[in-house]
Length: 86
Image (cartoon, rainbow, N blue to C red; front, top):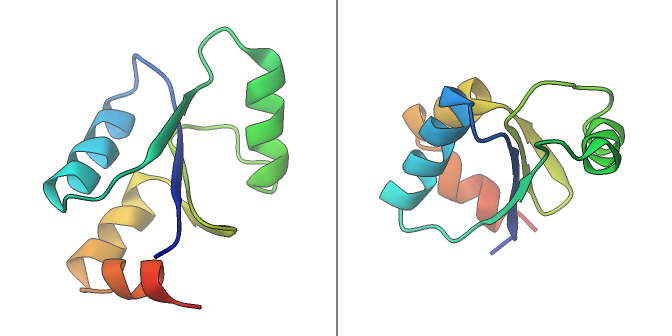
């Protein structure tokens, strides 16, 4: 299973929703806060092809996107399949 990485901000409701969805599915993830950390935010933006909003979610090297994209994977039943893709 691919490692899940999520860039977040403490005031972001979409970040909380994304983390709750992952927890609901009993999926472990690494969370990196971009709060007041310009160098971390720049790394996130580079890794996500310029996206400046949080959350930014990755399954291994695959860029899922934000909460809406994560939720779409969940709603279509593709979430676990994407995590298992080799």
